[in-house]
Length: 158
Image (spheres, rainbow, N blue to C red):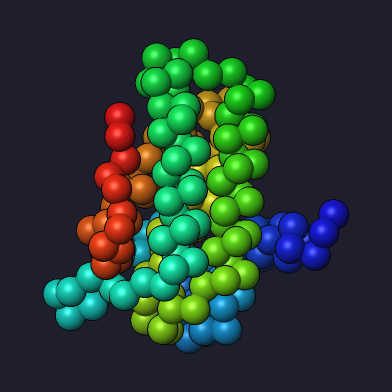
């Protein structure tokens, strides 16, 4: 297991125990995990600025979903395919964790969105309803352009 995967796995395990207040106070790009009860917010009515790594990672997650969206919608995706898709998503999450350089407030909002994607990926890998994880990922991808100013973002096609 390489160091990135080890760090990512540790973060997943710690995510269940990190409190919301600790997340709000930390900003060391360790990407602690937000609760799904937290609501995303705009930056005083404006979208949050992004960096190139955020656009790249989110676009690759979106592309992975788009490549499989028809089979997911038609309920023809196998458990093995969900696990493979989750692996691709996890690779992009690890990339985002390693390369994210957002200001603290934008980063805190990103944590909320990425937490949803991480939980969805876990659901695709471990649950008896992996399709629900895919749907959660689609919803997070649809939410992303409403909160982040990604001028090159192409809406999810489905």
